Length: 390
Ligand SMILES: Cc1ncc(COP(=O)(O)O)c(C=O)c1O
Image (tube, rainbow, N blue to C red; front, side):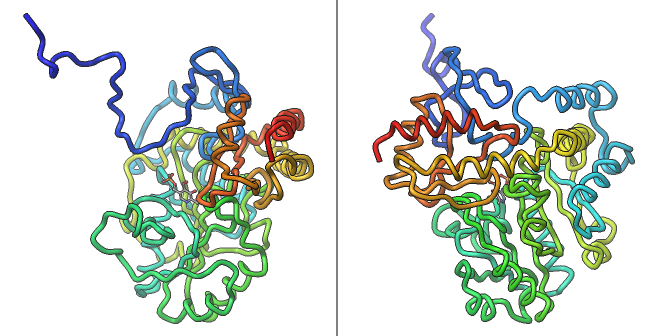
């Protein structure tokens, strides 16, 4: 009997994934250290780390063992049941931050952390206005998307934003003072804007934001989903710039690939968070918490912050050649400014076995490599860039 087309699936070539991601011409089967192996068995140097997630690199022995141990011991209990691994992860994260945070709320993704940060700020202040920065990316959920620059025109999809939003031009202190008023509940800002192309907002502007928030009684939220957890060579960009926010969100490198995120809160914020005002099923699960502990342990014991600073500086010294004319960003959140569309350079590098990233700025090639990167890997990038047409 002949099969109808409907019954003929699955066809070998059919892909059931929603077609929402433009994919690189690369199919990965395994990875080790800073190297990916593709389906043809070829090695590719990974300077992109899965959108900044893979801080410790691939196959990190202690991280892998911590997950295996936790899986065997107890793979899940919700927040309704206390677990030592969760308590330890929260304490470890606060101590790692070297910032005066009093409380941690664990969630699953960067967008969810920002969603909760905004909710807490709106409830605590009783205000309805949020200020964000031009160029910002904060995630794809209703509140995080509302404070993402350009989202409404491109993909927002919700009929309205859940609060009033103003966008501040980057570095414009006068505009910032006009837009952040006594009606503002919070300012949300990435201290180094990731997707925008590793755009460093700088200590003076961030300090001015802090002062303005204090003047008008608004809260300051640092979105360190991408630039936090050691990526700048400091625990957080807040440490690098010497500006302390009231709330800080982080994700990506926090779990090294195990999905997790955290919202850190200063005492005055934590004091306003009451029973059942926030919630989650998966957030703070024991596997995520074991991953977080292992990540912090590795960053500290392997002195990875120092390595990020050193290798980040080496990229900036050695890779301004060929089609690259300058750099921006901090640590291993690097934006290389290019003479021609970064997408072209990205494709050419991939053909030479080096994976990089692009940014919303079409003339920025973005590097987000694992923190275990060595100078010898940077030399490979330098040599490949040197061979490309300027
Ligand atoms: C700065 C920043 N905030 C928030 C997000 C959203 O995180 P997630 O994709 O985990 O929801 C991202 C993701 O790229 C990000 O870079």
